[in-house]
Image (cartoon, rainbow, N blue to C red; front, side, top):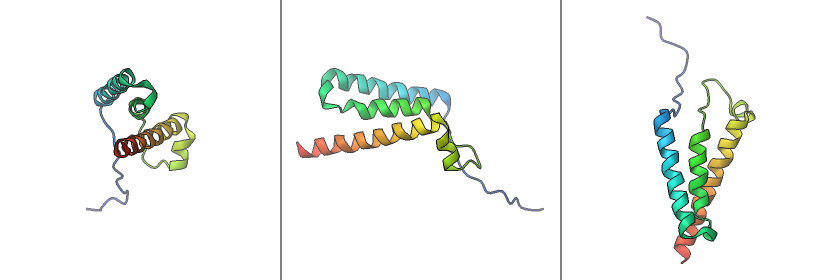
Length: 98
């Protein structure tokens, strides 16, 4: 019996109901943070993360990162993820400097 020469690349692929549930949870948190204090912008990270989970499309097997980012949805996912990470870093900075 011969082994396969194709390498297996695991891809994070969540079920649709979980992606929608996570994004709804993040949207609720963003709305509650907006309601509490709109001008502190702590809600931006949660909103970006919720939008990320709605727009996220996993990279296909064999697809390079450049090909993935050439697609508008892949590029938007990257921008939203970076915005969320920067927003959470900002929230940590605000929390520890108070």
